[in-house]
Image (cartoon, rainbow, N blue to C red; front, side, top):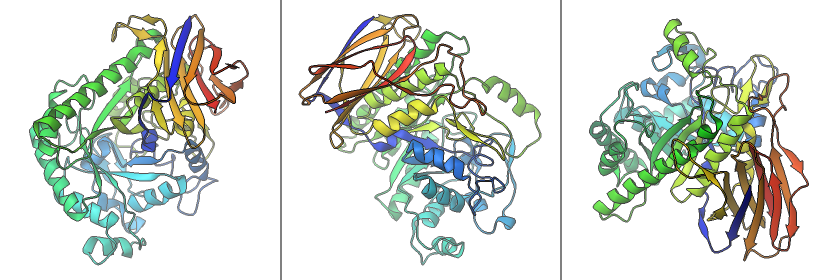
Length: 502
């Protein structure tokens, strides 16, 4: 299969917001307890955080981390996680039918985030609570001192405010499963009033309003239209979520799902434009795609287990063990975000540790990189700069979600400071290599090219504690510079990063 890709210096999409490579941690399963926090672990810091996990997160270089949920936040009292640990209450978490010890709260998470080199993206509870609790939380986190809540923070050991800039106004409030679920009109009114109160405190904060939990919701896309009509003048982003499944084990159909993701983003972008025009506004609202990942390996079993257990603390839950096929999917998802980076400014892989995550841990033992760690890591590290509008000529196939799915999924980024062009390419063809000709125009001369490949002959291949590098990137020497073109052949079902030095 031949593929011709042209990158021209004049044809760009947008400067990529580094928060496109954000992450997410929720009080769910072992994400927090025995994930990032395990006081008895051999690598534990004095505050109980696992240094081995911090090292893996720092390697990912994820600029922002959403916390504390997720479904968990919709019945969460943030005050339970402050003050002396021995005085913190144990609560029942209705979202996941577990018990929450509150040994990790805002102070502990903030210390972890600083150590992990990431900024906090905090969510407020607009399910069981509302405006007053939200404004108090913002004051506690961001006010220097001299008020009830900021002085309480100082009393609890943090003199300086954390100055968190990015705040989520609830989570998935369109979902009937959500504690405190509301109609679009109800939620839009509450979110707008909460946003107004937060802006009265600091009008420079960035606020995220809830969009649809996925594009198959019965209320989509009317939900976006109603909520944005109520909140447009007060918010900066609308949140979207999507998870990717392959229960039928049809790889070609699975890898076509990012076409559905692209339509989802395009539709909501159109709704934003419609509301902006109807309000005659100059204000731009963007998309925060703050939950996304592959999630199906343990989902049905976990749903059954949750109905049967008796409020355990930090149980094994949503611990999908990812395979090589998921590497290809995660690569296609991230490529979609890069190509839509003009409207998608923030995105958060869900989640970061243990729970449908790129990082796995063993209580008291090892931590390791799941297969999906690698495409996320390569994109986060090398996908910074300006997204390019590529011209791609290759064969396509028909799938349930789209009539013309290109076999070669590719995105390109120009980093002017580093003098590089980086292309992320997934060959979705199961039996033919992709013979790629990369044509580079008006960027100057190519000095060198480097090809990093992730390939395994078994789509079900996984990384485990005992075999952590079963699926991992490797350098190849098959990319050849021909004048101002690059030629290379990538194997069937493979992920590639092609990095050109100018």
